[in-house]
Image (cartoon, rainbow, N blue to C red):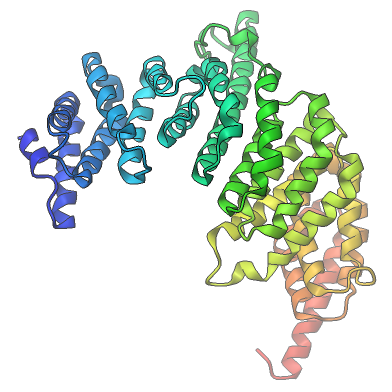
Length: 478
């Protein structure tokens, strides 16, 4: 029956085709090895006869059944499935995203349980000194994300093949996939180091008998060599890639390549030594801020910027201090600009995500430069210094965000300063958007200031609101 479903699955009617896939997945829930073995053998035996659409469909079923019952899969199915997917993924030298992407997804799913075998097969398709197939490097990146605990100890081998060929890559789509994979590699290294550090702390706690932790509670079995891997362990490999990508690939004609490269540069900064990062910081910030003028989609750029800022304030570092004024002015202008646009019905989805990421940039900087950020924002609220309503409203929202994010000792002595700094805004002549701003503070911000004991400030808002209501009533407005 399963073979019959596979054979007839490529029905011309989309609804019927979908039902074939769902039936195979339903059987796979109870008999995963039967479905996995039948599909694998069917696709291998009918390689030249099966249309690409049907191969994509059945590879998708393989992935879903694997995701449901990967740990129940018989090990003898691994090699045939690897051969099938590797062959489908690299057979056509051109990029056929749907087909090759489906095979790649199955390999990544297999790599969650058998990372060594999958990684070895991928590297066999990536001999030193050669440019691999697009989906080989793409799959290596996805595999590092899906199973970083197993793959990061092998990344030096992977990077030893990646770094030497970066300068020879000319095609824009290949630049994009290498930049994307470098981002994933670096992100995997950061996650690996963070998680191994947490588990070492938990292990020490369990050995000390503190907090009632049992010897096995929360402890992950780590691969050999864990103790030797730190962020700086990869700086030698990452720095040459950073230099080439930042100097050349950020100047690409393709916006997609530029934005992905900036994300990769941001993630690589986390692996540079402090000395390397400080020396490169002026160029990095100038390059990132310059891209905002070139590209319409700002979200990937802001994501890269937020990673760079996190590196800049790590362990209380003040390496950002010489660049603080330019940096705050640049992201303030960007954060205030979309205040009106984010309410439009035809808004691009990434615009709002970018807005929230810009707000996060402010609280990242504020972790170390709290005074500087607060004074900067308060200066932008003063009507005498900030002439446009949009700027004051946008600034008010940034300040509201900061007040709710930077809590504890960072804000303990800033309460009076914030309230007094808000007085010019409260005393501003009635303007619709400023009234909207007051309303926003009334809903979200002033309850916090009540806790600070600033009832007088809230009283001002309430009195102004009552006056506005009476005036509207006298004019017959609702």
